[in-house]
Image 1 (tube, rainbow, N blue to C red):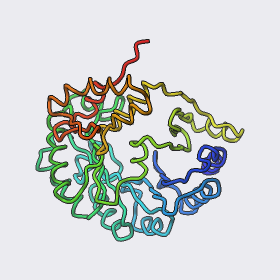
Image 2: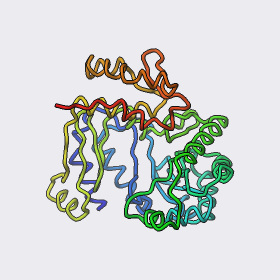
Image 3: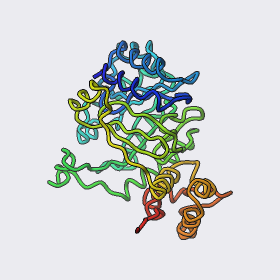
Image 4: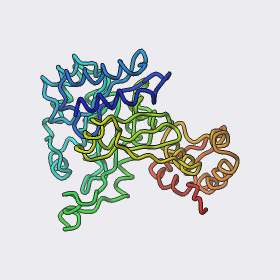
Length: 346
């Protein structure tokens, strides 16, 4: 698989011709199982085939059970300069309910060690967990702050079909997550992190100054990216593509010097909808002028007309031609965006 990933990196080098790579991200699945040598090999392959900026952000996703003290020290000696750690909760019963492989002690132990060796660390926290009181949620938030990490990503618990959690909810073992509780937790999180010097730069992401995720920011700002490996998605500004999910078929295709993938060309309506969806989630908002310049008057007029009612409700605000969510609108950003979508009936 590692050799196939390196080969795909090489096969696709022309997709970033004359453009500098700003970020390299090892994510999806469990990339922390890679050895330092394999990580170095893949990064070297990128450098051999692409122009890379002076100080690229190089992130590794990992779970606490993967990050023993020795592994953290090993990673600190690799080119990895940012860790994204899936903590989720510091409570044992929450982790069991979410079917996480790590326990609460591992969550705290790995963070205590990681901050000794890495300056740039992001952790994930889950809110809206059934039965989680506001006090319990604030314990999680304050515990995260106690480690001094500069970036926190936080998401509402969602029940995915055909998961263990889905079965427990259907059997009544665990209550259905409450939207009202999730919204309370979200607003507590926003207020607490902003009071502690974090910038709420995207709906689910909070960062100290200078620690915005370059990788995720590229998605939200509509920059192009190349995704390598089974199921990986890519975007060039006009087209989206995704590699086949099946490992065996992926390996076979790469062996034959073919990228096994599907591609779709985005329509102007697709591009408008995606920009509205991502833009409303961020501090950068949605630029009416950009919509006009890139997609035309039809779309900019539509955006202005459809956003009026949400501005009247205090959920959106328009300032200098930029439409953003208000404090009350943030939690509803995705729903508001879907109401602003352009539906092409032709």
